[in-house]
Length: 323
Ligand SMILES: [Zn+2]
View 1: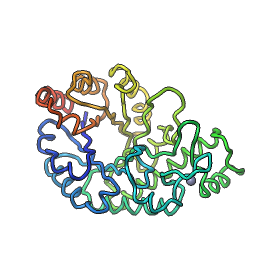
View 2 (view 1 turned 30 degrees about the vertical axis):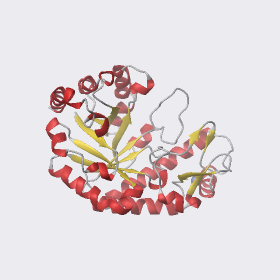
View 3 (view 1 turned 90 degrees about the vertical axis):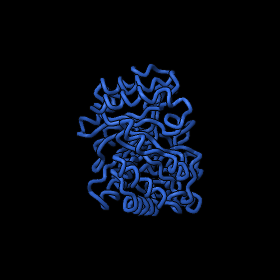
C-alpha cells in the first residue's frame, strides 16, 4: 500500500516541510494544495517544493484549491476568478448568484483548463487530485439554474429545467461534473500523457441524501482520463469505528473503482493523538488490501509536538505497509 500525506498550509509552509524525513519514514507521495490566489504570484515556490519532493523520492500530486471554487467546498478559500467573474458563477434554485463558478459556463471552463495546463507545465508532478468538483446543495437549495445550464438541460431533456431537484436534474448535475472532470483530465494530459488524475467525491458526513453532482462514483471512476478515486473516510467526524469505516470504503467505492480498472486511495485525518489511531489505521488498511492512503495532514501529524512519540511506530507501520 502506498501512503501519501497532504500539505495544505499554503506556500509559506512548504519551506518547513521535510521531504527527506517523509521519504525516510516510508511515505511515497505528497499531495500539495495549490491555491489559485497563491499560484498566481508564487508558483515558482510551489514548483521548487515539487522538485525537492521528487528529488527526495516522493511522488508529488497537485491539488488545485480555489479555481473558481468549483473544486473543494471550503468556504474560506478565496478565488480571484470568482471575485472578478460574478457572471460565470452558479445560480441557485432561488435565483441567487453563488460564489462558485459554473462548470457549464464556457468562459470558466476555458479559464480553468488553461490554468491547470499551465500548472501542469510548471510543476513536475506525478498527477493531479480533483477535490470534490461539485454543485451547491444545502438546506433545500441547489444549483445551477444559470442560462448555460438551462439551455443545456433543455437540449438534453427536451423541456425546461424543473424548479425541483428531480431525478433528471440530479442526473444532469452528475453529467455536468463528469464532463468537467473529463475536461480537467484532458487539460493536464495535453501537457503530459503520463500525468494521472484522481477524483475525490464529497464525503458523506451525515445521513440523508448527498447531492453535489459527484455522488455517482462509478461514473467518476469510469471517466476517460481518470486513474482512480480518493475517498475521504472521516470516521472520527462520523463517530464510526475506524475498522467499520475502512471496510465500508473497501466494499463500496474501492470495489467500484477496481471494476473500472482504477485505483482507490482512502483519505484519513491523522495525528499522534491516541484517539486518532494513526498506526492502527495504516495497519488495518494494508490488511484490507486498500491500494493507497492519503493522510491529512503534515501539520496535524508531523508538526505536532507529540510527533516524536509515534515516529518509530509510524515508520515501522509505513515500511511494513509498503513492502
Ligand atoms: Zn450553470
